[in-house]
Image (cartoon, rainbow, N blue to C red):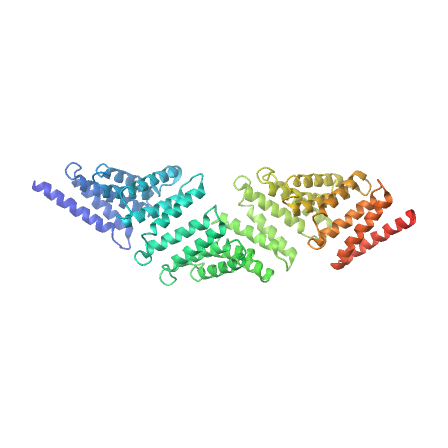
Amino acid sequence: MKDANERRATADSQFALGMTYRNSNNDDSQAQLVQAITCFQSALDLYSLDTSPVEWAKTQQQLGIAYRDLALRGEQQNLNKVFAALQASLEVFTREETPLDWALTQYELALTYFHVLGSSRRVSLFKALSCLQACLDVYGYETFPMQWAAVQYNLANLYCLLPTDDRYATLRKAITAYEAALRVYTSEGTPQEWASAQYNLANVHAFLPGGERQTNLERAITHYQAALQVNTREQYPDLWANIMQSMGNAYRNMPGDESEESLHYAVDCYEDALTIYSREHTPLDWAAIYTNLGITYNLMSSNDEQSRLEQAVACFRAALQVYTQNAYPTEWAKTNNMLGLTYLDMPEGNEQEQLRQAISCFEAVLHIYTFAQHPLAWASVHYNLGHVYILIQEPDEDAHQMNVQKAIASFESALQVYNRKDTPYEWAKTQSDLGNAYKELWSGERFAHLQQAISCYRAALLVYARENMQDEWGATQGNLGHAYWSISNGERQEDLESAIACFEEALQIQTPDLTPHEWAFNQHYLGQAYAHLTRGEREQNIRHALSCYELALSVYRRLHMEMQMLTIQRDIATARKLLTTRYM
């Protein structure tokens, strides 16, 4: 009997010492956990399942928790030991006889399932869900409010991670659970738990895929601001900066009439975060902020556009000091892509140099974005490359034609991914621009190139509808008309008639006030087509041509476009001479 009492006393002592080590705040927490595990194992060598079942189970439970804490410090292989110990405790702890210990073990099992990675992760998350729901059979809001709130909080975290078909419904469950936890957590009594729940609730609203987008983001901002009441810059600078960054993202994504004001708020939030983040100490956060700042400057519409885009360029280049191709290939590619798009949008400065910078950025991105791994991103970059190659001006025609050929190759690469069924808008846009490129291609067989352009424009019109995409429809009709005019060579009557039909369709959409350049261009070439049309009433065709010329001239005169005015004035003179000499 004496030996049994001594064994029990020694076991109790080892268990108590293990708890001391596990709860220690010593700087070397990993060593403390190893010591705790040693103590718990020593206790288990002395406790008997038969004679001390509760103590044995309690020690298994604490051993499992210690193994999990160790696993979270990089010892992932300990997760199996966690499950073994916690499951062992459930040989004794039952819902009926020891409900509190049973619920605690279920809770600890759930937290452990959170950390399972790899192919078993999906199954483990659903096991965690079962464990947490089981806890609520014991923990009630009235009877065990703190435990109940902790379970609700972790249920919400779990819903955010859970892979389900209905993402919106699952995240709504997360919101409900966070709000439940906040019935218990308060800023005065449990400030850290309250602030954490507020921050996570804000994130869910910010990323909620359904519902009213503006309302969701406004709610997110409200919860971020609540979290800042606890996580102040003075006491928790890192948490404060993280919340400022997240709040900046919410402001940046805000739709609606006040979106411009929201973008300015976003800039303020990002700049506040940069008072904490630095390239030396928090390089990834620092680079992420600069990337987001660059995106925000791109989205703004107020103030001097050139100045804003120059600021965006500076931000993206700052981020690229951290994001290198070898260390962070995905972030490097995304940032280079945004940098290229920014150069493409610049309204002032050395346009040709900016376009060449854009080409360098897009070509760099293609080192990372591949057809096999990132097909949509790869296609988007090829489309942008094609667009830039069309805009580049060269000192001689041979160099220009080479760029047109590069543009065609880029657009055709994009069409390896884009298709009418899955990506109709991107497919149509690329077909339209490919048509423009073929129309500009003079080298080789010109007639075949124009036929190809016509095929591309007709393909685009399978998607562009006058009813819901009238601007694109009108522009494509105009381009198709010009292609028919070019292929007619001023002689092929059926092509001239097709050109006239297309120009007249385009001019039903385009107006001299809203689209003066396009309207005048199409009026001019409609006049050219009528002037060369010999079918039907020849005199009437020439009078139509003269009317179109005069309409186009009135716009070119208003726009002070001298070269176009001279060209049309010559065409007017030719048309009037024909009328005078042949029909009067």
